[in-house]
Length: 206
Image 1 (tube, rainbow, N blue to C red):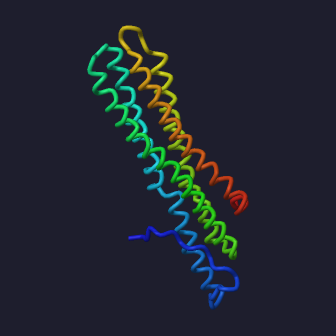
Image 2 (tube, rainbow, N blue to C red):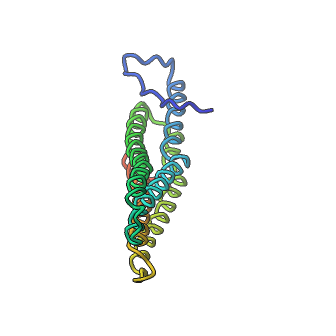
Image 3 (cartoon, rainbow, N blue to C red):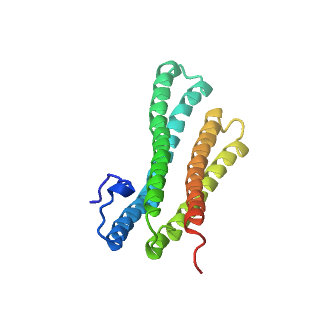
């Protein structure tokens, strides 16, 4: 199984012990490939979606007390606080996971820049563009954004008095907002990678 430990940064110039350039390029290529997989791997997108799913569950739990209020159900006083706590418990890990993921991406980019600055190797450097993976991130994230926008607008636009309660509208809009934010984070990551590739690697050869 691959190691969960990030590749270390390259040693400073006075501590480098590579016997020749080929050995340096081999280590550099292995480190860059590992960092690329960790940054744009499909598993990272699935983790982002898992955080989004946790956010949707949290929103659903937080809107359930509104249903009790709409129904004038006295059990609200007993179950309401419990549902709020459960909703926050489901929502908080998702927010923390997204924040940690963004910080992890920043660290990966710093390490990639450090290894990239050691030398140049066109074949290795070209793989860092990852056009297929970045396009997959972008398109799938835009699809999630569209789903979130549709859920939010549909919940508000098609709500009918007597059929839909405030809790139903709040649930639809809250879940849609979470999905939209999840997709936006993924699309922004794909866009940042594209800008980084242009800045550090230049335009792709035709």
